[in-house]
Image (cartoon, rainbow, N blue to C red; front, side):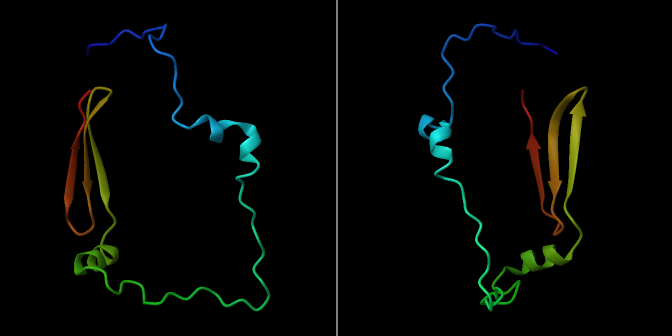
Length: 98
């Protein structure tokens, strides 16, 4: 296994992914959600179409079938492949390259 040396002094300054306007504490108080109580006599949510209506047949079979499985292949401590098998039988293999 080839280990890359860790650079203790970065060559470029750190740039956060979140803009500074959202990171400052002064603005977070303004963007918080307020939870409201449900008014008296309010009707519960009813979907317009029944569950599963309009879905492809494979999606309906998958929902009724076995749960998906995830298999991880390792080479020592490194994960080399992730295999996801859907309940409908579809398989997705993800090769991990380091």
